[in-house]
Amino acid sequence: MTHRFGRRTALGASLALPLAGLAMPALAQQGFPNRPIRMLVPWLPGGSSDTHLRVLSEIAGRKLGQPVIVENKPGASGTLGALAMSQEARADGHMVGQLPITVFRLPAMTRRPTFDPMADFSYVLHLTGYVFGVVVRADQPWQSWAEFVAFAKANPGKVTYGTPGVGSTLHITMERIAEQLGIEWLHVPFRGGADNIQAVLSGQTMVNTDSTGWAPLVEDGKLRLLVVWTAERAKRYPDVPTLREVGIDIVADSPFGLGGPRGMDPGVKRVLHDAFKEALFDPKHVETLDRFDMPLRYLDSDAYAAFARRTFEEESAIIRKIGIRMD
Image 1 (cartoon, rainbow, N blue to C red):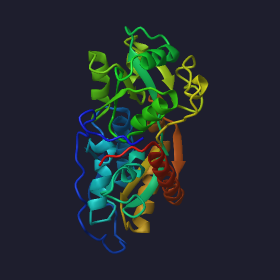
Image 2 (cartoon, rainbow, N blue to C red; image 1 turned 180 degrees about the vertical axis):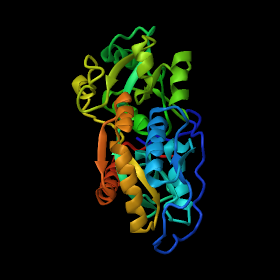
Image 3 (cartoon, rainbow, N blue to C red; image 1 turned 90 degrees about the vertical axis):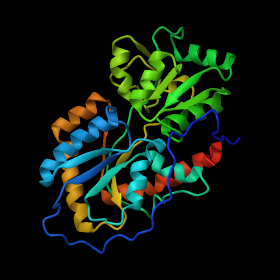
């Protein structure tokens, strides 16, 4: 079955065609970096990704001797930062950004992809992943995942669920769940986690699917966590089952890292790698990861590039199987 996105799903941002351009010649820069570094964060401010990348950038900036300035580029399911990097002609190391898993997924969802994950980026290092879960407002009648599923099956098309965007891991996984369980529900994409949470609190949507930006509201009793998507139960929520425990053989944690424009000089990439690796393992940053239940999953540049190739192949296969298209 092919899913096409018209009136029921708004993309919220269009992808522009990449600009032609070649990377600069190999850079043996003296005193790199010699100006502030732009960190492209493809989400709205305030979410788990934005918060952790701001802490990472602050620490890495001190090690590099130049500030790492966060620039938010929300929209297009977290791929606008990658699009900007693919259009950047200067691979001099002064632009880096998060490469969320949607970077490896969206090119398979369109006939005219705007970037090539295997050709357009320099892979610096892998960082972490997420704990995803499904939450509902605490005054909803469903006390468990099983009760929620029963309602969704009995009311096809009535359950609305929010995600950070079309093609996001949250969207793809909810559609995989629906396919396995024979459920029809309605996807409502948002530009970021804050909007997604506000929608479920206000009743605009019935379900929120996202990373642990919902955790304070769960702990305050305003939201109820029904299921998590990790391989094992989350440490902070030992009473909440995983998808596997409720009979759905899916693990989804959307791992990601940092990259830059293609053609980055190996020496420049090494400087960036070393600074961000130190920042990744810095106690202040590790504390931030723990606050959002984000596991530390370091890979060096070569291992991350190999991981990216495998991920691109795997995600493309999933897209072809479930038939989700954006055009």
